[in-house]
Image (cartoon, rainbow, N blue to C red; front, top):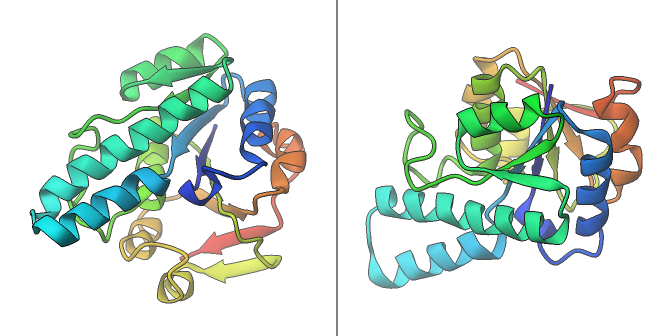
Length: 201
């Protein structure tokens, strides 16, 4: 089972429809898509800077920002299925289709309500909740092959502050894919190949 988090930096990318089509084609029953926040979450950050509301409010709004991006994905690729919660994710997987997580404002119970927790950490949380073996973080920047340490990626702001600690407490294998790696995703999610870049704790 794979969780594939598609970063918000791909919201306007030409490759986004190709990613969604490839996952719909190859990921039925084995892939869950977690959307980033993208431009929708950027609006939440800007509004908070102006109005000064609490991080707990911003966290709930950011979850809804992810939901908007997820609905956009389903609108682009009609074979994907919107799934509002973990139980719906499991139901869609059982039908052999690919769910896209559409979180509500309280859609990640137990997760700290802070900007230290971004969609990367939330994707790792989803992976743990559904028993996924692997998590792929799809980012616009292409990674160099090999093993990258999560604390180093956190320092350079490629991962959120909560991710290294969360990764250290899970057995989920985590990988980094670039925006053009949709061409290779079929064999990867079918376990016929492995990505070139792993994120380690």
